[in-house]
Length: 132
Image 1 (cartoon, rainbow, N blue to C red):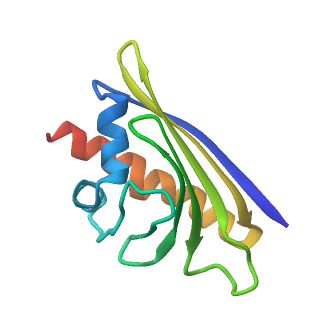
Image 2: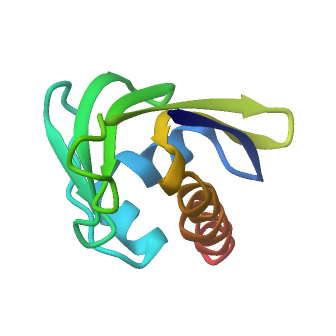
């Protein structure tokens, strides 16, 4: 079986463009999360994040708006299919938000990954943006 994580996270004072760049710019991604990342904005290109513990491939990239990727944690079992991550970046009246749907997560990885998005991305992004 697999599970899906759906999260909408608001960042006051940010822009959709800034949030998109935090995820899709390798240098900003690494600075914001505190872990090495290699990522490009090209469809079909591979990426890795969090010191190569996460890897995947860009399926769709719409600048400043949306990213769809295959996504795989090193904790996935060999037979587990890649999960699919969709991130939408949307401007709001007082900032911007990330609308995330992370599908096809193996049951045993679900709790760790759900907590990981909050701990390793959203909290760290807030801190990073606050200090910019």
